Image (tube, rainbow, N blue to C red; front, top):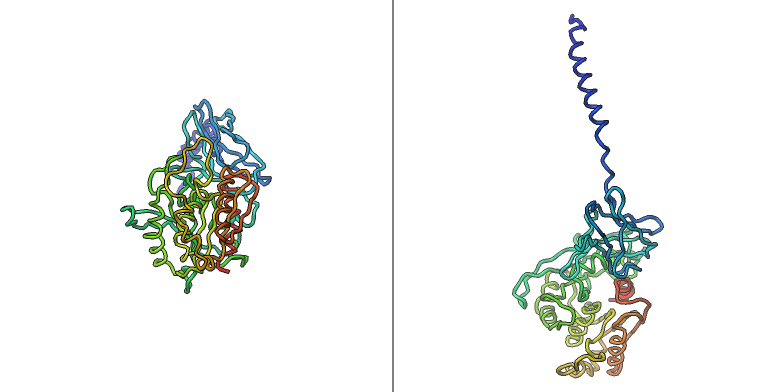
Length: 383
């Protein structure tokens, strides 16, 4: 047998090493807890944080968050973490970013983002509205699709929502083209706009028909405020987007199963595409928009060339085409800067005997309204 005494030197060495390791660990400072941002509390208070120990100032910027104005100052803690709490905030999705010593940055602790036109934002969702929250219902899929634009001679991207069961089922579906605004992109409706979740919840509640929703990119080049929108997108839509999507997806291609709607710039594009091609669309929706230029602003130059009404007079006065337009729906907030544009546009269409539905809601030119408009418009399609 081995004597137990022969292991005593090894045991002493082990215990000495363990003692040294414990002493070193005790002297090492405890690492700070990870920075959590954003933190959404049960009472809908939202705290934003960023670790920037050497920064001199940090502001929070956001599009639709109430009370921010030119930004909200964050307060620096002793640990170098800046934070600010807002709320309670109404349910919805909100874009935001930080301005750190004059440099705009997204939230490094938040992987959720939303693209606008030539920009990226961090994204926070405040739950509390079942119609747009992520609910325990069957979910469809939102896909990023790359396609070749023969009009623009380059590859382009759009987003497509397919309803629950599409990938494993058969049969055809109606198709709905959903357009974004001037400061947005094809990503916007499915992120800050919550389009996929809104459609999931409507379909699960049997309030809306299952449909394919195509969300294209409405900009064909760099956009600058006050510049002309041009007509390239309208040409690309009819030449490339609509034919490719309706060949790629299992959808009906007749007028009664095709709809289009858009917000702001996308609303104007809806009219620019829908009216000249009225024989192809049974449903048109215009959110916070109308015919740009129909209202003359004080001091603004007079519009050049023929008006929308003059250009499309034959379509506007074709009684047969109007019969197939099952829904022509407008909605704009009373505080929206385009409210008069919407009113004048609706008045013009009514003068040409169109059956127009027009809702003046509360609110302004924000995603807070546009999500609600989609939630109200989609159930009226393809019924």
